[in-house]
Image (cartoon, rainbow over all chains, first blue to last red; front, top):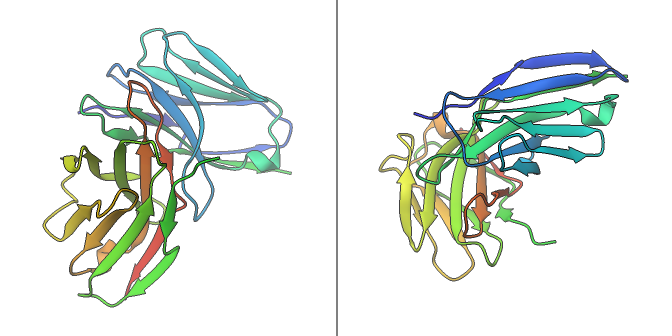
Length: 110
Length: 114
């Protein structure tokens, strides 16, 4: 069974600090997606990484796909209160089902 | 920008009643999904649908659940006899054909079974 493990589960940091959250698997994924979810709303797609070693930037967010395509990280520079939310990584399994990690709940303190 | 839309946004139903949750996927997408998320828990896969049939379903998706694409645009999830533990956010998602294409999610339906 392909699983995605996200760490940390919870992270609370001060505004302006940098942080990195992780998404790991023992399986190879053809791609990984990062979503952000606000309470009571659906996951909103942030980015898809496809190529091993790929780095994508979205303003202050930097996403990296591991060389072996088994892991990914999200780095946020100078976190803002608006970055608060649940960050989910997800990827397609062999049957094209999209599986999710449990997410990292991020809280940025003003 | 095209988006997945779900209705209703919130439904309250009595235990044992049938509910139908509705979704309009993005128009050129070919893969459709239902997920659920119990409050505070992870997003769980229920079922995937492609080419007018179920392509995969989870253990959660038992005989009480069914999906349908009654016309060219709607994708529905029916729960025949709701249980208290069916209370959750239900998300519909769709994606277009092709490898490594992303899924786009609706805003969800909050189902409360009382």
